[in-house]
Amino acid sequence: MDPQASGAVSGLSERARDIFRAIVDSYLEHGEPVGSRTLSQRLASPLSAATIRNVMADLEDMGLLSAPHLSAGRLPTELGLRLFVDGLLQVGELGETERREIETRMAGTGRSLEDLLTGTITALSGLSHCAGLVATPRLDHKLKHVELVAAGQGQALAVMVTEDGAVENRLIDAPIGLPVSALIEASNYLNARIRGLTLSEARVRVRQELAARRSELDVLTARLVETGIASWGSPGSNIHGGAEPRALIVRGQARLLDDVTANEDLERIRLLFDDLERKEGVLNLLDLVEGAEGVRIFIGSESKLFSLSGSSVVVSPYRGEGGRIVGAIGVIGPTRINYARIIPMVDYTARLLGRALPAVSGGLAKKDG
Image (cartoon, rainbow, N blue to C red; front, side, top):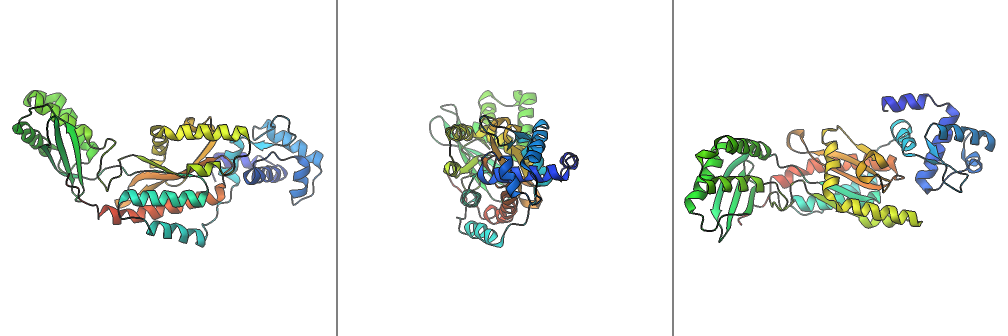
């Protein structure tokens, strides 16, 4: 339990905790405000409607509940949901049936990384009844060799080989009439500096050296070096079986329409779809979990990206070789998602994905242009 949440929960009386938990449980199940008369029938210990109303008023004063207009019932606020998730939610183990279903769906994916990620997130979306999100792995493999070769008028082919044998081919712009000697010089320049470095390390080193020692290269060669190093890792890269580095794969958006009951719900979903279209912002959110040890939950306005749509994100990092965090996977849905069921589901899927990565990373298809 989160220490701050623990302190807030301990400040509630047992009666207040029981009533608050019952309201949140009802909201997560039905999405409707809960009134005192309904609660008096659901609580284990008999309480009068008047007593329950008094407690509900106190919880509302604390910012944990809100009263929608024209309704005598109460709903949990985002603060209330956060308190519930951090301090009162009982998260169990994922059921054996669900484990097998995730494992079976992942086992049926193709051999490329893109197939694995797409199959995994589709399975997670189906089981959670939410939209699934997965950020593809960072390219932090160490580089072995770089070569720039002519590829027609105004273009060159930048070929990068990593120490684990993966190959990336990228077409880059090149000056028309560029001599072959400039391509050779640029390749030699890069190879003398990038071997054994990760892609991000190579970018930093080459850019620093170009800024400090540009006079050692002619203008055309320097431009080639800059264009080549900038192209790797940008959208469209086809290393790792076709998946774009730091791309975002989203599946199951239509599932967000399954439980829409009012016009305001439709507007909320429309806003969420708009948010998901701006995938760069979602990637920034997923980046926040890459230093996390386990599942993280963002509720409503806790994420500026989804503040208008009133959505919750449950996301976990997944690990690659050596236990290093390389990406993130999770789901997004309304704030009344089934947290107790989805949290262990996301956690298990992330761990399963991490175990499956070496199989596709070691068997990447070599691309030859």
